[in-house]
Image (cartoon, rainbow, N blue to C red; front, top):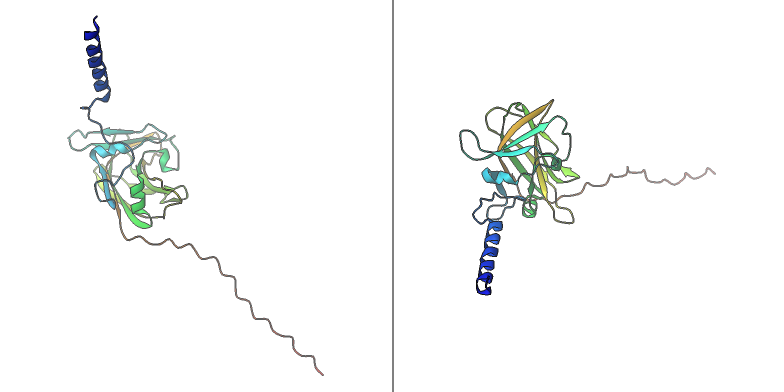
Length: 221
């Protein structure tokens, strides 16, 4: 093949490969930590396509599905009885980016989870936990589920950030007494409930007051 044909064809073929790899027209759902970019960072909602931001943790128990009747996508969470963990990061969780960590620190926030029981073994209860750092979290909050979507909420005073910026996490898991249990999450809203307050460390315990020293009585003459 002459050079006058080879090089243009090679260039076109390379462009086709690059175009195929980039897949510019493929629908890419949002991934990664949830940010407040482009919206009010003090009141964010995860729903529809943004539920793709959820991470499975150490187990493969999450799936994005479209309800049979249509509508927005929902997050389906399946947990088996042998999946035992305490940290929200070990199970299904959504990561809150640094800008949300800054917006929520030192403030009371409300977490509203719209969820329902679902699947072949529907969960009757679920738990949720807000983790700011290993030594600061709301602890697992328990709620009763119904077959219809309902909002469930809890409040948590987010502590001040540590010496470095990082991520906050919200974990959601069905309660599993045996075999496995399934639930669906339609949305999660996190919004502040009050102004920032300074975290004042606890005062050290006060030593009991001592009686003043007294001079010895003078000896009798």
